[in-house]
Length: 194
Image 1 (cartoon, one colour):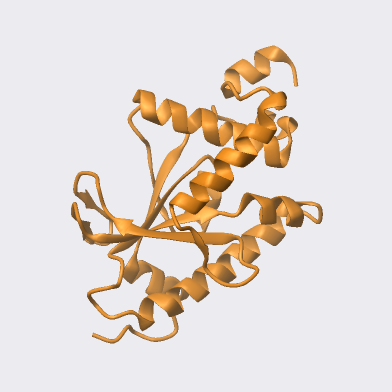
Image 2 (tube, helix red, strand yellow):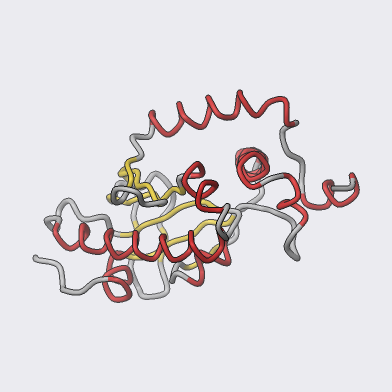
């Protein structure tokens, strides 16, 4: 990729740091207790309490500080492995199956355990939007710029540096949200127990 195009898309870690990124990614996933949504699935889930400001979703769901949320993560190694056979179609279809499994798990939880919403941060917001997530811009703080750099570096590591040249906008992270109600409405088969 030419240098001008890379600058336009945003900086990434040099390729000699890929082994360091691999360790950082593995440790980060372990510290966050990210578990696959289902065996062989490409989506992982981190459970935690919402730490940010109040969020109001378009369906009226309010996520307040301290509410339980699920943080959705991609398993980059599985996406890369599937990518050899057309990652966009195969991985997207697999993620929809994972969301259906997540909806079943969500419905089986007690009301007190059930996340109010599911969220994440992604460079691939178009896929999240197609899957039903609300996509929101992030304020460009130093922390967000660091997230951008880290996720662009992971994308370059797993999908190849040429992947960074695609798209029409700079590769910046977006926040994605899907309420528990919307998850069930789109992917669930039965209403949750109360």
